[in-house]
Length: 96
View 1: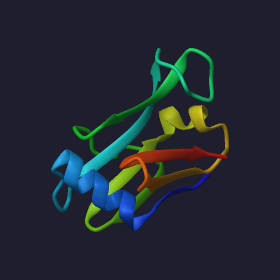
View 2 (view 1 turned 30 degrees about the vertical axis):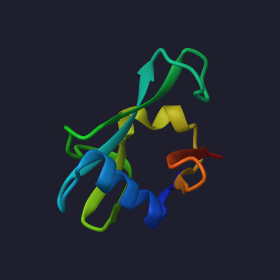
View 3 (view 1 turned 60 degrees about the horizontal axis):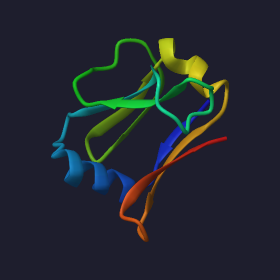
């Protein structure tokens, strides 16, 4: 399992979420929603958590993006890539 994020995606997160150096972005499995890889669950995001027991972690431009081991099941051993879709000015999550 690997987490990666492109620099344009990092810039999007910084601008959209008003992040600054030493901030954190956690991705987690949440019950409900749609579009997830597991029926009944979707990908959640929080900027209020710090890494406790990360399964995947990457730091770029001073921002740490991570997934805790307790949420690693959601990715089922797959890689998690975060890209910026310039055409739509939004983030694209690729899990494969």
